[in-house]
Image 1: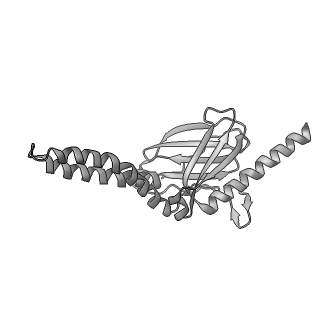
Image 2: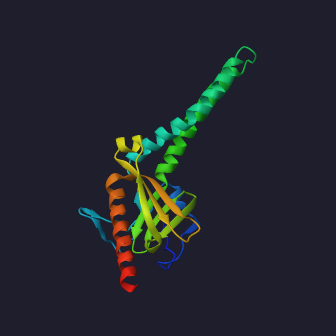
Image 3: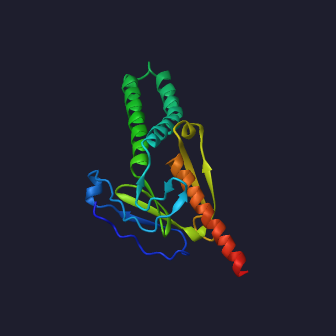
Length: 210
């Protein structure tokens, strides 16, 4: 994919969500390039915040797959029971059952792969960014100055795979929270420590100028 220039944004600007169309190379499966490492900071001992686009760890795909299966099972079983109850009334019932399960399995695999393969995150001097999508990309940027507080959530599946979900809460913007699931535990902790330090620094500056 040819490198796309990032739109310049003032650090105090509101969160913006911008749809873009990827280049043909991305459609061919070529991974997006990493941006130049600029404005990197140390968020925690042993953790250097990356400034290029980062992919989710492979473990996230397994978690997304399990979640997709859990979501797909109830409606699939409901339709299966309805078709099976009428198996003696229609000759095409067994064919419909086979088609149903093939469709359900295919959609489950596709949703999990799409969620894993086309989610990227980045931390740089401008703030935190999340990019989703393939042909149509949605990029959300959170300026560091807008972050009020943040949460780290871990469900049973995420804890078992050493993953976490990060939620950034902001103020005075159209989007008051931005979340990304499937982060590596170390990255989630590093991001939390980084933004916590920035929030404390901003509060100290406010008290100093008060």
